[in-house]
Every structure is written in C-alpha cells, then in structure tokens.
Length: 74
View 1 (tube, rainbow, N blue to C red):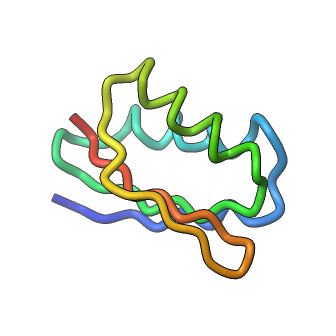
View 2 (view 1 turned 60 degrees about the vertical axis):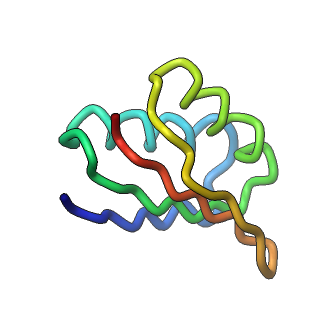
View 3 (view 1 turned 90 degrees about the vertical axis):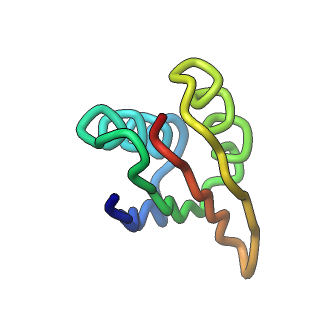
C-alpha cells in the first residue's frame, strides 16, 4: 500500500475533485491519498466524488484554511 500526498492549494472548483478522481484511477485497492485543498467547495465536491466512486473518506480536517482529506482506494 502506498500513500500519496496531493498539494491542491490554490486550485478552484472543480479541479481538486477532478485531480483526485484521476489519481484514484491509477491506484491499487488499499492505497491512500492525502489531498490538501484550499478551495472551500472541496468540502462538498470531494465527498460527492467518493460517493460516486465508492472509495472511502477516512478523515477530513481543516486547519489554517487548508482542508485535508484522507481517502482510501477501495
């Protein structure tokens, strides 16, 4: 299993979700993405994306204007 950190700072909707979707397509089951976003819309877009893909949101945190999503590939 691998862990990939994605720096999505400064990207606006829908780019963070699209980049996460593209990365998920290339991962194996059990791999982890840590996506760091500054766009507040990512709080809506990324969970919606994961409902579509069936992948798991392990956690979502916010600190200093940065949303961090831990996503596990199913």
